[in-house]
Length: 167
Length: 232
Image 1 (cartoon, each protein chain N blue to C red):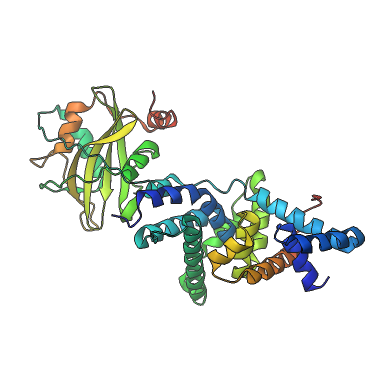
Image 2: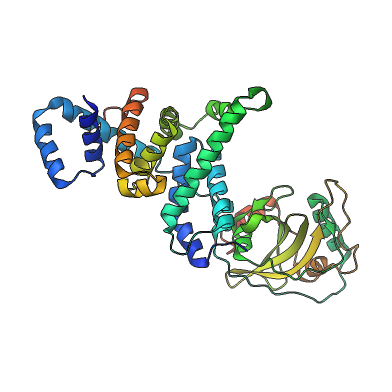
């Protein structure tokens, strides 16, 4: 039996869509986003959630941790490139539908960001979290979120021009 | 543009500046074109980020099924009757496809959790694919058929660490009810199998024999029935 109560499951259910989007903004493609989402849910089911935990913050935090773990293990793998098939190459060369080009372009730009900037920007600019919520999820001060997001945007605008859309 | 101004604009674009700072910045924005231009860039970037990811929130069914609240309902089916020969063939082919070996002992059927129900509701039958359910269980619907009572039913397999289970669930009153389950063993990596019905206590095969109204649905038929939420 899983460690989550029915009400926690319902609360988590309501977060899944946003979590999937968050996973996509971190991994940059649908297949890896699904895998990250599933790994996050598996961890949540295995480890449970404290009674008083806020399902959204808790699940985003777990997701962040799973992603960071994955990044680290990928770094380890990349030190031994002969032993690993790089799936990312396959993803990037996949033919993408017209409607997905923009997403691919944005994802490629996000790929250039340091992990902590990507996390902060995803939570605020894509997920619509407040700085305070992002700070809780990432376990850093609000001021840190503020500066990471500003730096993320500056970096992003160097790699990616959002066009002429006037605010 | 210095870092401090850039950060101010970034926070302003996110609506995170307090009222006084925001008013001060607005005054400067009215007078400084460079500031305005950067703000527009940031807003455009925000807009494109949100647009780009607006459709990225589609959750795979297998993940939804893992999270669904547990409210199991299990109805063991224990009668045993004779069956026509073709049912042996159908059941045997299922086991062949699954590579499972039936065990003669019966397991207390506890596999009726709605994680299973969600999978039965939306996952097509397969000869090889497993769908993750809660607690590391893997579930594979193997066929769909109409029961003699007119209900849609599905046979499925459940793989746990080193054991397995077969079962049949039928959709009654909008809910999947487990009708019968039997333990099954996954042979160690081998493709060996024992045909269904070869054991003395094959409740699942019995159920198919007794309750199946017609032969199993084809993949295309099943797809149509799933798409119609089993309302055909």
